[in-house]
Length: 201
Image (cartoon, rainbow, N blue to C red; front, side):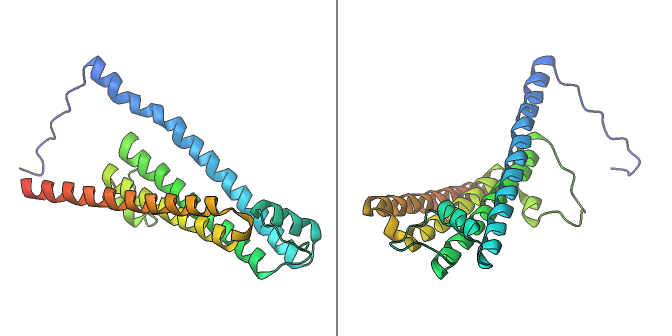
C-alpha cells in the first residue's frame, strides 16, 4: 500500500447500533463518581495522618480520635502512642493507599477499556500496565489488588486480635483465602484463554 493512498472512510453506523454503541458513555458518571470517592479517601488519609502527627507530640484529643478510628481497645486507658497503635494507624493509611490504587486502576483502566481511548501513547506519565490493558488483564489486576487490601485488613485484625472474637478471626481468614483462590482461578482462566487465542493464530 502506498503511503499516499487515502484511508477508506468509515461507514456510518445505523441508528440502533449507533445508539447501543453510544450507551457506553452512560458509564462516564460512574467513573467521575469514583474520582469524587478518591478525593474523599485523600481527605481521610490527610486527617488520619495529621492526627498521628499531633498524637506523636502528645495531643490527647488526636490520640483518642486515632484509637477510636482503628477500633483499638485496651484494659488500661491509652494516654500515649504505643507501638500497636502506631502500627494499626500506619496499616490503616496503607489500606487507604491500596484502595486508592484500586480506584485508579478501575477509573483509568475501565474508561480505556469500556468507554473511550485516553490517547496516552508517548506520554511520559503513561502507566506501564495501561499498554496492554484489556478486560481480562484488568480483572486479574483488580483481583490481586483486592488480595493485597484483604491482607492488610487481616493483618490489622490479628494485631488487634484481643478485640475480636474467634468467629470473626476465622471468618476473615476464610474470606481472605476465598479471595486468594478466586484470583488464582481468574488468572488460570485468563492463561487458558490466552493460550487458546495463540493456538488459533
